[in-house]
Image 1 (cartoon, helix red, strand yellow):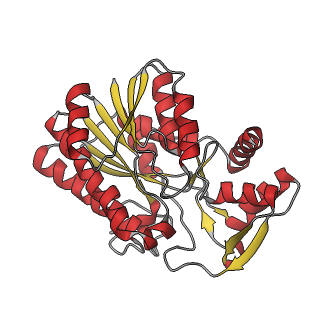
Image 2 (cartoon, helix red, strand yellow):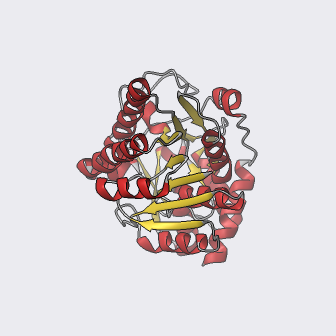
Length: 316
């Protein structure tokens, strides 16, 4: 199978591209290596790692460039697309709403149009648990209306999910929405909590701790997440929305303690109230993922945090 992985120099994108290449797929990655959310250096490091695979190639381009995207699709004739490219992060989205909509919504449509024109068999779209907003339905279930997003990142992702249904309805496109839940692990994003904590315990850097750590997150190890994406790529489903979490939320305070225990030092934490764009708890109902995809997350949070910490120490 020939697969396009967008955002292949990103955290989840690199892991997915490597997994597909290892199993023998022909993989093309696309990434523009922007530094809006975090520095380009880590993206280059991930891309360097992918050079080990002869059946992988990276294209440096922007998904908003419709001509470049169409030319790539016409040249490569993809069987499937794993669309992971995005500007992520709920707080940055509040600062740059126009940019987030341009990339996460308009960039997605650019890819969808190219996939439609070249008859791609399956389009898997990485969305986010942030679309659930302040829902009172816990655990989060895919039938929730998700019509009250708290910031532009979630709004753009939800809009792209809905556009995917329109393309399925009008044109028969296979479009599977995968909603990620707090993905972490080696090569993770420097703006996310696991990396921020690791930096804090090693350098003493101050970082905020919202609500004194009394917030729950469905921490999902990156290998489990990308296992789910591969399953979705292999199984066109018409149009579906599927949660990919672990289904076992952990208190943020407990997550902090795991990192501190491994480091043997305390993080430099500054208590702050929860930002308006954030939520107290996210928890995935993963029954649909188990039923439709055979998804079965295997990595406990304790084991995942240890793997992340070992990687962080090894790169330092």
